[in-house]
Length: 255
Image (tube, rainbow, N blue to C red; front, side):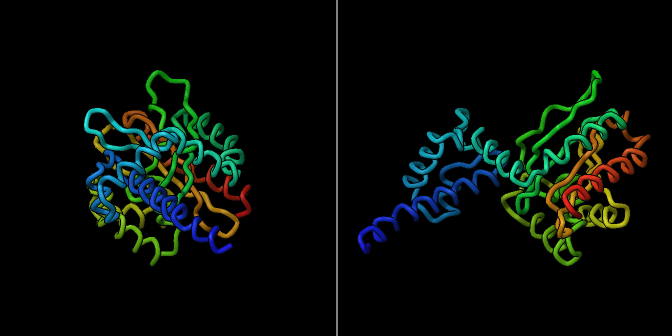
């Protein structure tokens, strides 16, 4: 009994380290270098390299040949989908997403909240020549997306404001150049109107609305996105339709 317990400790420690490295890679949109991971964890580069190699063999990360940085791989999406299926969110939301797409004739996304980030788990495309590329499987911090800002607005005000400030200051998200004042303005807009937007230099307009569970907790979000030249003149109408869809999904979850 004592021997078995002793034997399990190194294995548990290795597992914990591997999961820690996986989380660091997940927080690194541009990829994680072995040296950076070693500095953050306090592990030596050899240990980090071995653990990342093992995660790669298991299919959870991949190494980009150009700069040898590590990125998440497809198996993580399998886990995300399994998590989402357990919540039953995608199944519940699908008919509402389709109806929202049909009404707006724009791309509709569904994302699941995972801590301080959102994971895109479903996307419904319009039958139009100009539409958005697939985002399924993508993970982004709450403060940089319309859906994420809607989620921040759905949290209790002190929690949402504090989380927004933490995200903007987090060095792991330094690649996202975001002004805290602007984020707070958008979050406040979402609190008043029920929907949020985000401005990017890509001529795409995005409208996001939070989805709540039976406890009133934001568990995800829905968005309508499309080329600015098509969406901008219909923002208010599309936003109202998106709010109605998110409320219907929330109601189906017991909210």
